[in-house]
Length: 92
Image 1 (spheres, one colour):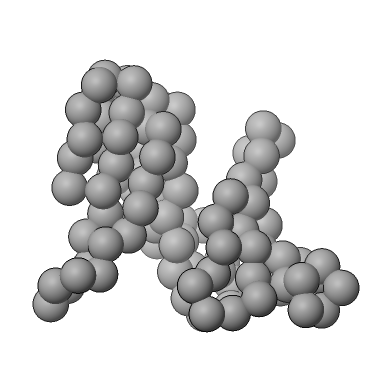
Image 2: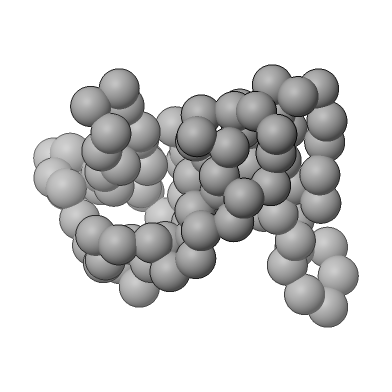
């Protein structure tokens, strides 16, 4: 689950293998947007998505075991993805 930093949006992922974007200012309707986000998977991958697409833009194999967490870092001239995994590593 992730909350958009400036908009009234909530992104959820669930065991049924779906990722949905919800707008709480629009009575919790599922919405589409042109922004991107990343998801972590137990299949050892991180996927980068566009909110309006049902297919990932990129799939990155980043860990030897499942990926538990992914976060965008925008603190420099380009964004980075930071991940943690069941292989007890943190990767940037």
